[in-house]
Image (cartoon, rainbow, N blue to C red; front, side, top):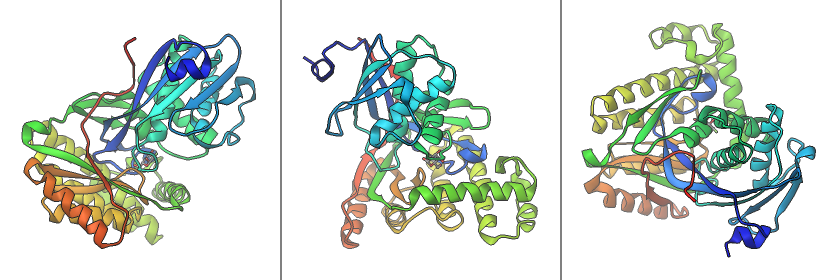
Length: 378
Ligand code: GAF
């Protein structure tokens, strides 16, 4: 008997999966309506679900011990559900708010996306719930619609003012590709990213650190970007052309806001240049752009931290072609583009550097561009 059957006393109607992600480049651009370039990880949240005849949601996580969380679809209140269950509950709430009348469900989750590592474990939970509820209720939602529902759940139910990067990556990525996404209209293109063909590997270094002030700082960066756009008289920083950046910066009085603007506008430009190189089959040459992106996040956007800087600097010194923090920052993970022959030496050097600095050992693994959310075969 499966855990689902043991806990709920019924067999599941189906199983669904949604992955975590790393972002190759394009950080803190999504809420500026700019460009991002994520890939899905093989690590995923899997949900099994059974449709119920009433309006009860019963939620159970394999990973977080404890009892089944039971909620009524008629009594979901933003910010009142605690812990992991807020993400699936928020998705149900967002679907109802979008006008879909849902039936209840028993849902069991099992995720191997590392939590607190900046690898979008929350988005994976949101997107897998949205897909399962869409199927159980025959809503037929598209990948961008699922992603939007996940983002609304996170913004308005959980209370984290994230952009759409993580949910779109989880909903839409394709194996062997990075997703070149325009976050303004959610149009995107799958760009082939065949690292093995070029003798490359993308390593993830999970620093295992999450600094406490991350959420407040994220909201402040977002507000600073909005202040920058207002000072320049544009709807979003995406609307500042790279060619006019110097003139634009000269018009901003606040020094911190000026640097935030410089990060966002140059980061959008870096995304475009990385895509050009990938399209030209020159993946080896993207390294310096990754490292430049890290410096911009560290110095201009100020969202890095000593552990991420140590991972990036050590990986680069040990043979990586380029490295950067990935995700929101203030801890979490870095990525490093590494020639196959240097994978072992980069891993060893980063491990030794962390030990030498008295830090917890980082978790290092390979990012293999994997599939986005899907229903699993019966
Ligand atoms: C976090 C957010 F959830 C994303 O929307 C994005 O802003 C990212 O930080 C930074 O690029 O993952």
